[in-house]
Image 1 (tube, rainbow, N blue to C red):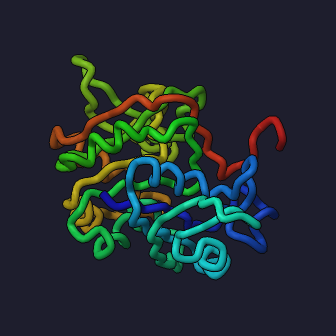
Image 2: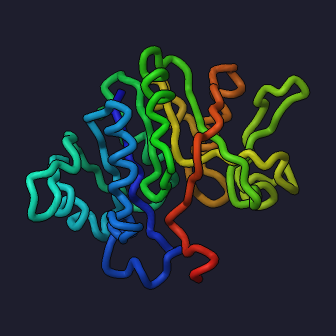
Length: 245
């Protein structure tokens, strides 16, 4: 397996906080936000990681993380022992566009994709390692949410199988005026090597992006999508938390 962290975009949801820095370097708890997806991938046994970041503050990201071998400040205690590569996303074009940028990096191996602003209570290490042993199917993780209109959510058939995935029902995907379920797809995905051909065949959505939901839907329609219930809590740290806003 190889890992991809999507750390691009313009971070407009965080307003003034990201004028002078990449949002993924903002502090969350005792760490910069980007440390959490790095830790998740390392715990899953993944050492080769590509970070795709936006052009505005790409230098800050590289200066901070370097080659991926980080130690705690004023200490020899290791934080990470990774082999990091970088690419720059020159304009926001969607998560699927970022995945497409990892074609050469993946080198025919399975790819674990993490959104750089998603934080998970547990690293899902066992599930990721198990998937990596025979990565010929796609796998996504879902969590029940109270505001499904803000996410891509699953559409279940009568037999309980996943028939479709709807991105922001009524806004981006107008086939559904309201979300058909409350099971939201979170920012952790596992893809076999043929994901890049699927990205190449995508058309931009109504908001001008290549949607990762369309990639996931294509696997569901082929019966090659596994859905895993997420262990523990999950937080989208790329927005102001309501109780602080």
